[in-house]
Length: 288
Image (tube, rainbow, N blue to C red; front, side, top):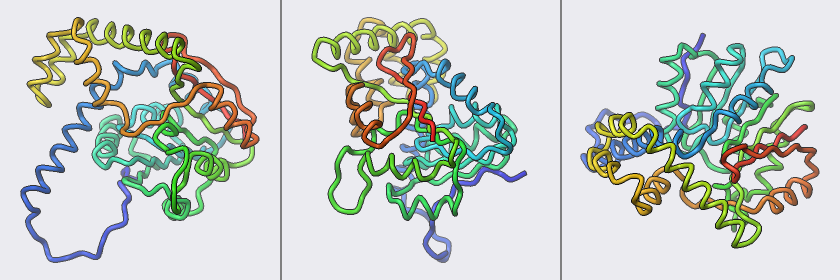
């Protein structure tokens, strides 16, 4: 068995030096922010139902399945995937080294060190992704709320959303699956207001139902935030701040019909399933 590795191209080794204090402080803040995201995310997203559905796909009759995940974060889906298929070969990509460090620790504690490698941070570039994968093609490619962080259009050589999805399709073997979890916006202002209202109420309910456990988990990471949690459930501005701490920067959610048009434009054969309680979340299963 191999230990999960955090793969990132490095500059040639230099004589050991003491990192500048400013850099050390920045790294510590990144790790702290990642740990806070890890605590808050299960309250913001009720992923259990979709995790069960994704893992049911992984149980298919594929010997030693290969799994690629873009946006693996702190490893919630990674842990579930490798617990379901201990024989899997897994490669996770994320923009945050701090998030992936938490994922590696989580796998190690669960005894799931198996054939897992990570690339973080990574460039949204077909050549860089291809070099990291070293020819690996997947039986399953998982995108948990990652597409919304990919810009719809970009200038220069970067990948925009349609080009990135086309690349993902090339990374999956014939007969494989792409498993895409995305938030949708309302088709109009009224539907968006309904979705936002429903999300806010569900988020507040999950937080307040487990408030003391949550405050205890946050106490060592951000004592000020832990103290402010006592203002729930009656502080809408605190809910917005908590969401900002979890949501990816620069996310570009689309209405459901826009996602469907994109998949149809690419020629994807897909099935869409709506989350039973978080009505803004969908699982799109693309058959390759």
